[in-house]
Image (cartoon, rainbow, N blue to C red; front, side, top):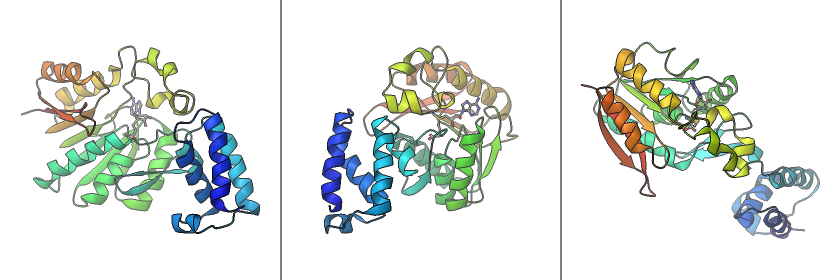
Length: 273
Ligand SMILES: C[S@@+](CC[C@H](N)C(=O)[O-])C[C@H]1O[C@@H](n2cnc3c(N)ncnc32)[C@H](O)[C@@H]1O
């Protein structure tokens, strides 16, 4: 069978497993399993032996709702490939907004010190460092597994990023710009999320405590009292922007909201004088 015929059968299996984008995902899995380009896929490349066995194992994993990116081992973010796998959050497209905000800020101060708190795969920190090499970039995470992925990704795209294990910004002495996409899902809501998230992505990357804002509150307090960055940019969930802006104002900051491509208030920018 050629790759497209194999993908047709694979799509039917994925559809039966409840996947919305079964055709697209089947094509990706077939191309990745065979190591072929889109052009070769459409030109009728044949799938055999090892590639067929690999695809079968991958389909079984995807039928269990393991995320596609864990199976292929990578996800694209800000134009680069980031290694991901079980134990690290898969970077989301809306988080690219944090990169854009940092790059805009760095245009006025290219040598500034930037810190990303809760870096996961390193997608944000590594993208900023790769796009703005004059900046000094450090990033933290409390998860050793996440930091292993971040190290791989930094080595591939921006080897100068300093990666530190620890709670929030505590390993950091000073910062001009702080970026964070912290866990912000209320604990009680996690089990109701799609299985790819609730069953597979790490709780430590999702769980923001009873109202979702436990770690956000802690980081704002640390910035207000100790770090005093010029800018703290926080990604937030739907409906959280106003409460987080209010937390910032109560900590003496000016607050501005930034919308994502879907028109949702996605990032809260807090500035101290
Ligand atoms: C929502 S994920 C974001 C990951 C990455 N920045 C991204 O946007 O793809 C949150 C990250 O914060 C980390 N984290 C959770 N609690 C933390 C803490 N107390 N201190 C530092 N990092 C923490 C998690 O391990 C996870 O990697």
